[in-house]
Amino acid sequence: MTYAMNLEKQSIFLHKKKKGKLEIKSRVPLRNLIDLSLAYTPGVAGPSRRIAKKKSLVYDYTNKWNTIAVITDGSAVLGLGNIGPEAALPVMEGKCILFKVFSGIDAIPICLATQDVRTIVKTIQLISPSLGGINLEDISSPRCFSIEKILKKLLSIPVFHDDQHGTAVVVLAATINGLKIVKKKLSGIKIVINGAGAAGIAVAKFLYKSGAKNIILCDRKGIIYKGRRENMNFAKQEIAEITNCDLMKGDLKTSIKGADLFIGVSGPSLVTREMVRSMAKEPIVFAMANPTPEIMPKAAL
Image: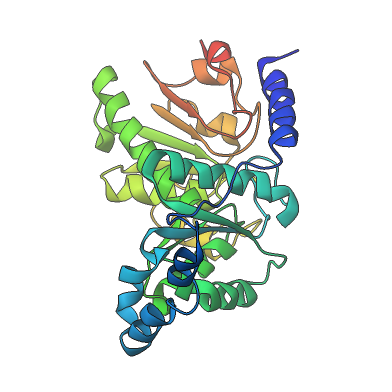
């Protein structure tokens, strides 16, 4: 049994045994009539009346200040794809406990039974009064870009798309540190990104704005270039304007030759040892497809 298969088996056992990974706990005691009257009726009318007069007080009298929603439609879950809202719930619960354990933030998993942009936006808008922030998760591209853009205009609370912003920040940090080790500069390296969904496009934009000048993106149909018609959308067309300046065409194997940095946000086992060996001297490989990477670390040596 492989390491990944063993982990999956243990995880199935854990989830079944615990029946989920989340619970809600009270911050105040409920020991007697007074406690009940303070936490609920009739005492609770006091803070409600104050909030009604001044909405901003909701941050002082409720847990809105420390509550976010992790929201998905189940359309692009991990490396599993469009598996639906129910199957996405274990992943959303997992993200929620990361928020709680590592930062003390209360996060609520919300899996929507729709993949319509307008319906998703309207639903999030309607539930936003209870929340201090929105974490969009595992929503397929290019819809995720539209949803995020609209919500940022509509809502007064932060909107964060983990697959874009979280991935891009981590990749840039790793790139900066990696380049220090191999003594190369971001502006002078060739970067190949495999996967042109939310993560790949966001990473490309982040690296470009940080000084990278030679970036090539690949998707299922090969290298993305300005003017390509097959398997394109508005997000890919936009990123084609600032990447692949030489209009290179071909597949991943072609693009990765001579590359200093490979970033994988695509699928399992798409990169071979031979492809890694065709890269530039002292290459950096970030194989990040989840749950199984493009190439395993030992296979890349």
